[in-house]
Image 1 (cartoon, rainbow, N blue to C red):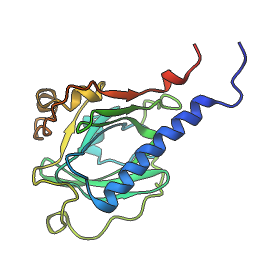
Image 2: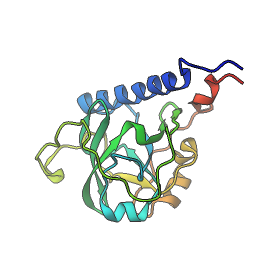
Image 3: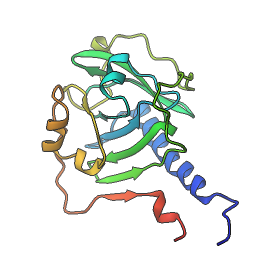
Image 4: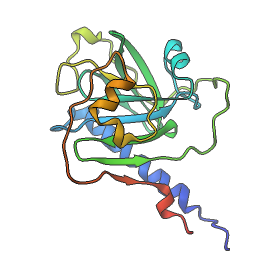
Length: 202
């Protein structure tokens, strides 16, 4: 078998992450359009991830956030994005490199993306690298208009192996005690998930 010197798999991953970057940048600029909202899973132990210590202890490997109702100060850079969310009614800032994202799902249209990590992160917490995201706005969350379309608190799920299932209210409610379930968007069309495995030569 011929060795892939071009590394098509890496090129496809880069292209898929550019879709995520573009979608978040549009949401940061214009807000969420229509019923669209985002379920994003990421590795908390990946290099460059910056989350509060209590959340890292609660989710040592992976956690999922939902950008739907209340979120603030969404800023998107080339390598990472930053967002402020409520956890137990307390606003916290999260900085998430795109390389740490493992999955993205939009329940409104049942579209999803799965990403592969370049290498499995080490068990110990890595040193935090400064992301290339703009600095957050100084306005406190209670005085800043949410970027979402509603007034419900932000949602989180501790584990999200299947992002399509995370969009269903029953599973989301069981996974996050302090969060309300996302609005169910019924559809007869099965979820469309793009995976890097589809591009690999068997």
